[in-house]
Image (cartoon, rainbow, N blue to C red; front, side):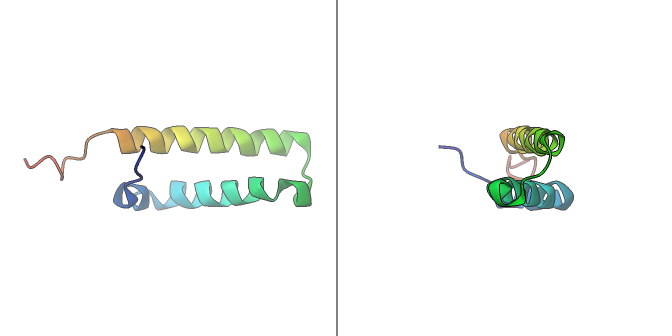
Length: 67
């Protein structure tokens, strides 16, 4: 299973906070009822940040390689 490395996640504070805020906004989307264009932007941002952190967590860390 995919395990989140919190150190890699916290090494990127701006992207991490954007991911949390974007996810929170999308969770309460039925209460907010934003325009369709804003909804598409939020979903696109969530996809982008998810792919970004997937790539960051998939790369081997130089600190843990023992070199």
